[in-house]
Length: 320
Image (cartoon, rainbow, N blue to C red):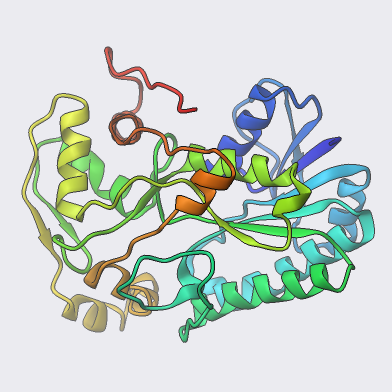
């Protein structure tokens, strides 16, 4: 389907360009503000201010797909950072005809105790969830109006290779060092974790299938684990003993939020760890034929990233 332009050089963007190359796509661009980073065989790196709609349009000319795998600098800038970036993607997709393929999260659904499915409404009341919901609503409206083609893939908290800043990977280095860890919310409620490689495989799959466009899809994701179970699984994946997992006091977000912007912003999303947070990916698995990376492999890749390299005897298998 021609060139693929992948914007965002974080773990999802990197996994996506690698998946594209693995599938034989020969013209793959990886776009970031600096354009710098380790070489990825078969991929050209490009420097670009993604909020510049004219520049993004020029880059996307002749492309078959434009992937939004962007990760904003921090939670506290979402409300000002995302709107111009989202507009730039819509402009570029409409002007060039490239399919807009967006990597998103589960925030738009808002708090719920039931497993999240693609058919449910976006009811987020918080700033970040409402913002992501609006981004998809705008893209879907433009798609339905025939102005562009758009599709969105949603995943839960990331794990897997190269992920260092998500909740599970953040505590992994300490746990693998044999030290107890603390987590936000509760350590004993079900929570879904999505491997970035499964996010990438879904983004690539829907980009090339017109019958999937105009809809939200969930990345294939393993059955949920509690935070305590997930930390123990990561430890065991590389032969380490599990460690104690305790929750941070909830008051930390209130008191700490007075001086630490990240903690202040997390008050809006901490419900995800205080009650079940379960992604149902059965539709994707059934209709797209994509299965999640085996959980043991997800945990090994997460541990290897935390340890800074591959641990002998922990090679990862590739799902169907």
